[in-house]
Amino acid sequence: MYEHDVIVVGAGGAGLRAAIEAHEEGADVALVTKLHPVRSHTGAAEGGINAALHEKDSWDLHAYDTMKGSDYLGDAPAIDAFAKEARHEVIQLEHWGMPFSREEDGTVSQRPFGGLSHPRTTYAGAETGHHLLHTMYEQVVKRGIEVYDEWFVTRLAVTDESNPSDRTCHGCVAYEIATGELSGFYARDGVILATGGLGQAFDHTTNAIACTGDGQAMAYRAGAPMEDMEFVQFHPTTLPSTGVLISEGVRGEGGILYNDNEERLMYEYGYANNDGELASRDVVSRAELTEVNEGRGIEDEYVHLDMRHLGEERIIDRLENILHLAEDFEGVDGLDEPMPVKPGQHYQMGGTEVDEYGHSCVDGLYAVGECACYSLHGANRLGGNALPELLVFGARAGRHAAGAVEEEPEIPTGPGAKSDDWDEESPAELGAVDATDPIAADGGAVATPQEVLEQAVETERERVETLMERDGINHADVRAKVQKTMTENVNVFREESNLKQALKDIREAREEYQNVAVADPSRTYNTDLIHTIETRNVIDVAEAIALGALARKEFRGAHWRKQYQERRDDEYLKHTLYAWNGGNPELYYKPVILEGHEEKYEPKVRSY
Ligand SMILES: Cc1cc2nc3c(=O)[nH]c(=O)nc-3n(C[C@H](O)[C@H](O)[C@H](O)COP(=O)(O)OP(=O)(O)OC[C@H]3O[C@@H](n4cnc5c(N)ncnc54)[C@H](O)[C@@H]3O)c2cc1C
Image 1 (cartoon, rainbow, N blue to C red):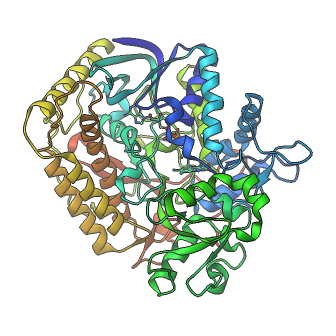
Image 2 (cartoon, rainbow, N blue to C red; image 1 turned 135 degrees about the horizontal axis):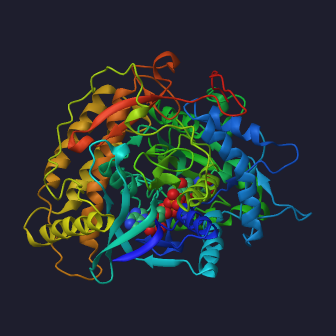
């Protein structure tokens, strides 16, 4: 067994920032990560980091843009803290050596991005995430923070009180990929999940193969609900054949979208008469797919993104990486031709329900970064707001876990936050998941923290042995079934019949998963075993997304419903929660908080 004050699971931008801050506050910290830190998916981020640095800009404008972008489903305490603290975080990154792109006079450059009222996106060429990871990893190494890399965390060690708000998280169980060893990690003060996104629930995504929703699913089974999972961001400019992202930075620099008639579609068809290509992502994705559906798409599939008019010098200076991506993955020279693009799954606005310090309803269990939901992005995230989120909330959670925060949170979590007026039936029959099956359910009981951890290790060992020893089906078919139905039925445009079909397919996949087995008997680098365990997480997060989408009968942000074409503030100014509930999944709601310390936000019509 390994032992530290704070265990951070995941070493992307959020995990690295959390570890640095907890260490600064005097905690003995360890990072446990299934990938080497600089291979984390943050490294794929291209476009930039928003912060109101310019003298003509201000944090409250940034907060307002974020709330408007969220379609008024963000919580004010999280949004205000974020917009204020992002400025300090970016300046600190600069002091740590982040090689930001600069103006002639040496100041850090800031480019326009979708939905922003001021150019406030700082960047490092089109490789911002890569530089961010390296800059923070250097700080981790400098501080001597212990990194357990290529350790795959499979389970949280949590006490088993029936009310999740009475439970405590004492650590986690991890599988060392190189040796097949399963070990307990005892956390004296807290476990911070920073495990990233869940794009592998879809088959056309900008996310890497490792983005399987592990943190959201582990926390869910340990008692911390998933929140606002129906809000999935589909990025408007992904390469059609692979899902590889073409950064919003291209449109920020002046790139233009054309349909098959070579019309500038955003203006020609009135999708966004003011902001055009720089409208919010949900608006641009719907515009592109409407063009395709109405017969003005290219090859019935995509539209063109043209940056040729920017000129070679500017493209090479600011977007060179985009040229390589278009050439390598689509065979297109962006200096000579427009690039084919279509919407693809990109980001998960929802995640583990936490407060503005990243703390969940389970004592000692935190979540930060893309796997978390402090209701910062609400129904739609603005481009360039995820990277500062990693920094601000990573630091906040690190500080809190190290015991250095005295303020009480304003965002409530857990079953106590449930709306009083909630009396609706679940919109679909989910069926219980057998909580006694060691493959299907997490448990945890007994007295001392060490015993809780030992039991979690033992349960996990049984699960792995069962998967390795029995005969059964391969997980890949089960995962492919989920990905296919999510892409077909829970995409940009959503209809009731499709959502029900997705839930049916996911339920079937869950049943089939009961018969999966690992064919590869190896104890070293057994990727078959790892992917099999991840697939269970993919099923859990996919079900939450589809059910939340079916239950929300309105059109808000990224969530479009054919039968419900309006935002319904009277009924749906509330967050969707999805709780494991001992193996009988439960859906409920809690109110949105539109009033912060300094700002009160009034929902307005959202147009660009
Ligand atoms: C292609 C692309 C471009 C983007 N560009 C931008 C941009 O320009 N600006 C912006 O603001 N946002 C951008 N985003 C969004 C942003 O980059 C991500 O939301 C963010 O980087 C996620 O960071 P994270 O630390 O939460 O997760 P990640 O960086 O994905 O890190 C997750 C970590 O968790 C570990 N992990 C996961 N599961 C386990 C497990 N079971 N056990 C142990 N370890 C585990 C992984 O090893 C990894 O270290 C982009 C996203 C994509 C996909």
